[in-house]
Length: 240
Image 1 (cartoon, rainbow, N blue to C red):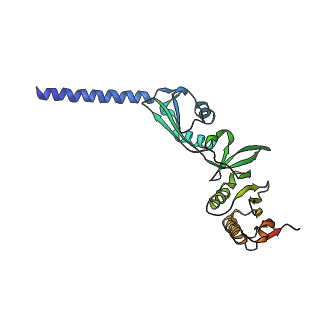
Image 2 (cartoon, one colour; image 1 turned 45 degrees about the vertical axis):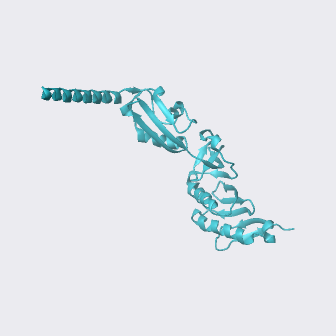
Image 3 (cartoon, helix red, strand yellow; image 1 turned 135 degrees about the horizontal axis):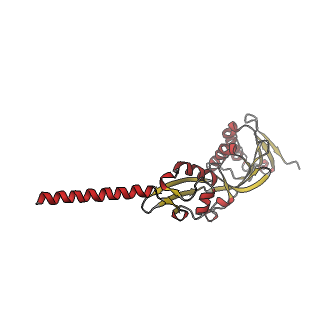
């Protein structure tokens, strides 16, 4: 009698297991609607933003959602630092975790002859104005002009160095032909030129110049500093 009860109990557990497994399998083939998308991490984006900026179409079977592709699309199109798209069976739907980029400067770029206003983060990424959560802003004292994709590394180097130095940058300016000029609060205009491979040495030289000239009468007369050739920096002063 006892063995029969144990056998019936095991059969009941197996029945529950396979019933639950069948239920989960059925759920993976169900259609996901826009109401079943849940966004976490920011209130800046809506479900419509996710659809407009990815290849997601609704309704779509849960199992058919290409999570890695959607993540890549949303990260690029919404200027996100990170995004995770997760299929969920219970509760049913899509869970989307987003992490926005934190701006450290105002930014400006040109697309098809039109100037676009936005922001730039510490890694040099451009953030569209509508994709920036302004309530988290600190006071932004630097502005980046002429941003382009291939300037990201240089901009990142500049912001990284500023953190460990005495530099107080007012602007980072890339001309249409790629010539880089900085404006520093006390050193005024600093000419760096076209070669991004020189940026680390150039930044060290700028910091050294500022530290050495601090308190010197010439310090307040600087018009510009030319470091296009790091081995031969030139300082131009205002003439009385």
